[in-house]
Length: 122
Image 1: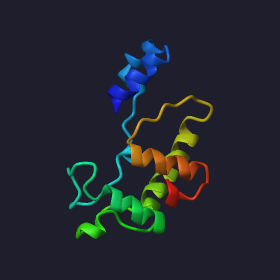
Image 2: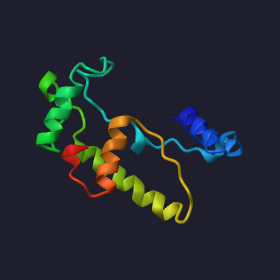
Image 3: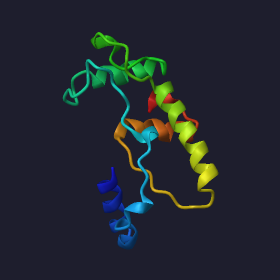
C-alpha cells in the first residue's frame, strides 16, 4: 500500500516524491479481491487455488462458492471496478504518471483487463 508505493518510488530514484504523503491516494478499486467470508484470513493455499481453477472456467465464478459462501467477488466484478477506476483516473490525471500499487490477484486481473486478454487466464 502506501509503504510499498514509497519503496517503489525510492527504488526508482524518486525519494523526494515518496516523502510527500499528499501525493498518495488510497482507492477502494485497488483493494484485494474479496474471496468471501469462508476464505477471509485463511492461508494462501486454502481455497485460493480452487478459486483460480474455477476462474479459468468462468469469469462469473464468485470466490468462496466451493467453500460454502458465494459472497466473494468474481473476476468480472474485479474487472468492472478496475475499468471504472481507470475511467476516473484518465479524467482526473490525463497526461500524468501514476504508480498503482495493489495485490497480486487484483493486479493480474487488471493486466488481463487492460490488455483485453482472456481474464479467465489472469
